[in-house]
Image (cartoon, rainbow over all chains, first blue to last red; front, side):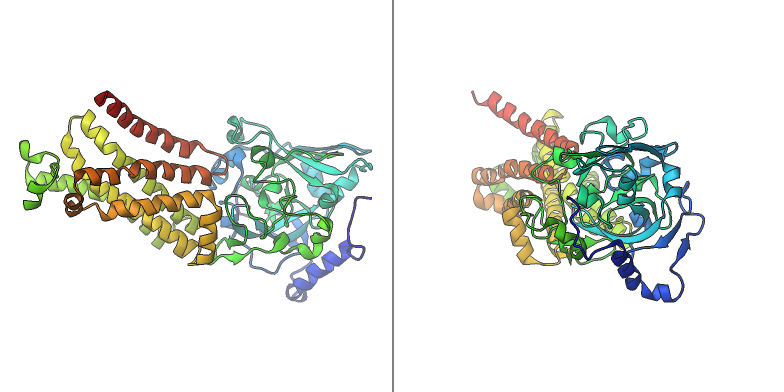
Length: 306
Length: 217
């Protein structure tokens, strides 16, 4: 049995706590069905969603979230994705979910958005480079998508792939990384209730530079694990190769859990700068989500499995 | 010009032997060089005060100061080859100004890292110096730049004598590669920008090696 949650942790616990944390909004009746206002970035459409598990920290301004991005498919500078990602056509878009499962399926993005109960989750995002943000994602748990294809007992890992389309993703025209970008999770990490497939941001569909039309969000891991613009998800029996690990294995491990005690070889991970703040703040183990995820790594040497 | 008489080499870049250009023109050219060196700093300061340094302003500030320090180090190293190749020996008189500006940018780069980024967390600074190769190299380069900046005056040239002064200032041939290595090691994946600086540096140092090999059999 690979799904190793604490027996007392159920989805309901998670959601309840989220509601608890946001109780003031709940009391004033803001919680419930949210419908974001029209307008915003070109192509952004409002999404219908309920409020889910969230931090009470102040979200990073939308302009910052959408203009400071690591998305090497559109260039290596932080401003490149906002500038170049407009070329990407996100319709039609399908996601193939296959591998060790009984019912492999190709999902259409609009069917996914309509067919899943969307929630807003305000998560901290900690980049391996030492900065962080607080981002209101809109999405649904990855476990719902995985359950839909009926995984077999051979499904021990989940591999993800980003679109490969150098005509629109101009950064793919030279091999700064091995394209397509790939990421992976252990199956228990993938079906953890905090692991999200995000289709929106700040109440609207994802801007291209943030990984439209759908991306992964794993809040207790460094940002690069949260792969963008996904076209394929495969259940496998072995640990899949991942883009940054292939590029610099000593610097980026498969797990890449946020860990202030394990430094990146070239910089400390003990502190981070929250975008918009002046002083650095201490980085929390598992990015502050240890209460919910640390059990999955019990008994593992996190210095070895970094 | 008592100092100049005692100086082991013509401090005025050989001006005395040549037709003296007009003083005004000379001052204007000097002012232009000075302003060109100061312009990136003024532009950065302007952007800082108008809140135009982007989403992560502290990172932008530290990086830009560092990049301009490296650029001016390379410009400083390009002066001698330019003077020889273009047969304009008086260009050499700008070398000190450019070098001191490079030192100013590198100092501000270090100061912004310690004072703004780390907020004077000297414990962290010390750990960084010991554990992060790119910071170790950067600090080493800075430490070596200090004596060059201190001895940049005419008085120091005379006090030390030309040969010793020149030998000390050969440190720049160590400092500049350290600066490029510092940049290279910082970059996560796209090594093209530091490699461009490295290539320029290789040309500048290679030219000197070629010239030295040619003149001494």
